[in-house]
Length: 433
Ligand SMILES: [Zn+2]
Image 1: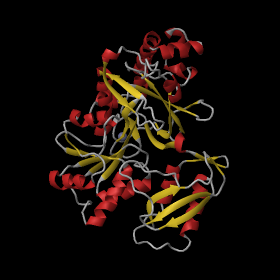
Image 2: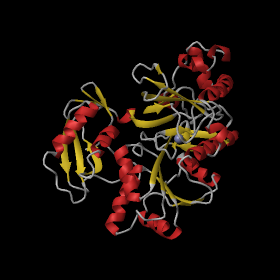
Image 3: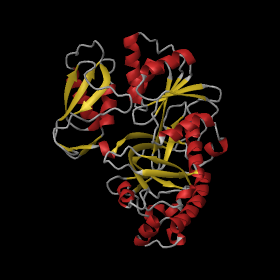
Image 4: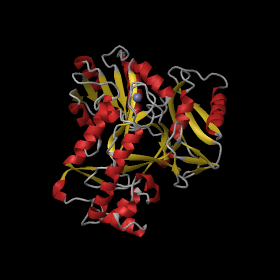
């Protein structure tokens, strides 16, 4: 364990410390963030005393990504939530920004340091340690992933950055430099299994003992995890962060039963009902949208930020000894479809279809017939067959029945030959045409 004192602290002790940090952060927001001064005043909170502590945080308004975006101007392209003078920033990351203008994520030296600490805790939970060699496959560039990679230096590992889009170079590094760990998206990990099989590269017996996946949900889906572990002959654990709040905030330990909060003390998590916004109790098996609040952030702290990640949480003790909350991402609101009133996540469809392995390859594509998230049943789903696989009689019907039983919606399942669906070296597209 990287920081046993923090990671094994009881939930009650952590809450007490977080409460102190939160009150300090709230006062800081009123003093330094024009965005929150206005927003909180509008909601009737003009003083730190009125804001109170963590026990009443649910009374405070949420922060939506669009509000931050809307506060950006030519004079302040970062947004009105910027809480420090520009000369105190040491880094500005940006998001990929599908709408053209990227949004900027500024950090002070202390923010960056806390991010790396968080990431180091989350990744070390997977069992990687000083002295080992790790290959990474992210083209970090302007993106926050770059800060996550700094965690490997912090852990005293030898980091071999390879980047995306060069599987030859990656496999050469694995063959020649014999890393014991590799970090990539689950989509790329799956793609590389096929890539290696086509070229006779014995991935199962390579030096890689641990594959750390992040960047999209999937690594925690049982069927996907089993497929990756088989193909790589390695243990697969996942990590997850969110650009606006922090990198690799969550990291799975070797028990593989959900990602622990590595950002303990820096970030406060809440669970809400995504439709009503009501707070949900953090207890084993609870599901809802994850909401995060910075506790010790300087550059652009966020309060009750809606992550749009739908998660399942666990609070029961983990055999690894870490006491931090665990969770698994079920899907993103942005990807969610509503089929006659039922919420359906494409990643959940993939998880169910994966149960039919080895008959299927694990790749799926949802092809909505209508524009927008509201869909009429049956929802068209393309399911790819395994390599060289002939469709067994009745397979499509069995998948359809299983989807109906597990996710309560009606699908039109179309089987497609292996290799039909596009492979990704970064993140898989689960919805398209
Ligand atoms: Zn654990």
